[in-house]
Image (cartoon, rainbow, N blue to C red; front, side):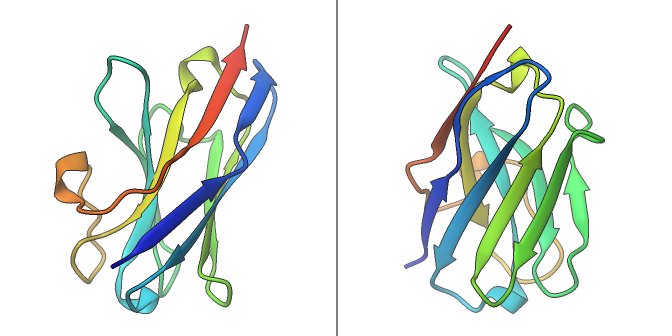
Length: 126
């Protein structure tokens, strides 16, 4: 079983910054991509960003490109999401996860993933 522990969320004003962390354990990390999803009440869980664990290639959804920066620490098996220029639309429960198969792919559909952590809440006030 894989496990994910998200942290770093909190309350921020529009235009501020937060850095989210995800401590993961389980499968061999060098063979899988990892990334972040987010979900607001009454909304579907949506893809935010992903990174290949071996070489660090990143992918971002259009709504966060230029504001969010994804990185990872391979020694600590930890994923990070630096969030700048926060908007009220960024308010959500944020989850990290690992791709279900090896390679560069990271499916953007939440239904493709079998294991989830508890998430970390981010609230952005206007």
